[in-house]
Length: 383
Image (cartoon, rainbow, N blue to C red):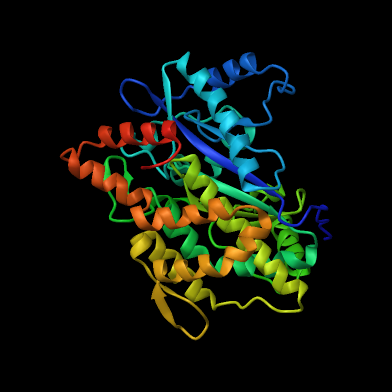
């Protein structure tokens, strides 16, 4: 089958940020998305279309809303867009006793107790996936970056796969699950890949290979629509973008901007290589799978595999070199400040490290972790 890839400006940007709704008193997840969205529409009626707000949307569970930017050209523009939506949702939440937070998982609310949004596609997902589907109490950040040619799609996907562990380690923020410390930096990573068609992408040398894969999935009934391919990194033909879905939920707007800048700069660097007639190296799938596990388990302490020759290195050491290489790209894209914020994450630690530290400081009280996450989102940055 032929899949058309929409026209898109190279390195244009879109960001999706999933937020958890928690009771302002108890810190438990609360199923009030419908009430919040109704209030959002009242507060911002001019933007609502057919009862749906374009920048504040529903998700699988009623304890979740997603902030979605429009098409942006700089990371600063995307952050401003997200912040407008965040303040709107916060105003709505205040009317319903709801606070907001973002991390890969909620530290203690039980996964089986969460209500599903009343939409046919979500009901179908839960019916098909049963126990695993009911466990998807997870939150992430997705970054879309525009590509000016479909010929770049598969090579750029290959390039981003090489940096999967870097993005995962920086964003890892889900050490707790149902009140227990899992021992992992990112429980979300391992949970999400249990869904059909989720997890690491298949890699094809040409766009035609991706088209053949989609045809096979449709023919055999694995999917009914293209968006049911839930890869960690995936092309989005209808938008003309590559979507990076690796990351756990990020707790501050500053962190979201840092990851968006890193993703945008990586995609632009791959595009530059292709425009110059170069190629993007790939690694064997067993290396890619191992890197994913190591980053989920060890976060910023992961020793990752760098190349097909099995060279290894501490992920943070490789990140420092990567940031230096990307500085000229960031200057061209106007995101030097945001890219520099990646170093702040490395220096002070990722979300999973802070959550464990807060828990330890409060004798294991995970409600203190929730209070800290709420405060982080309110402040927009860490000290």
